[in-house]
Length: 117
Image (cartoon, rainbow, N blue to C red; front, top):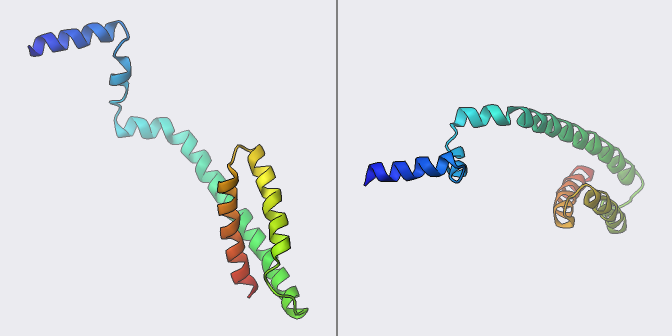
């Protein structure tokens, strides 16, 4: 019975019918090697993303000082709506969902308000 099973699997594999099932048996080392280049790109982009967010937050601090010196409240709802609408437009052109952009911008805005206060 076991020999028969291996014979059938071998036969199907030789015809390419079961090749998908066996392609999933790659070792972690092989998978890591194959994904290494893409993972390095992601790491580089993550670093760039954090650097850009840091630059943005430094500008937010400047704005916070200006608002404080001029008695302007930190929360400017109309301005945030403008920023959100613009980023949703740009984000959707990059294939990002409006929900994802909204979530990211809400997190950034929350941190910006924290810095401004």
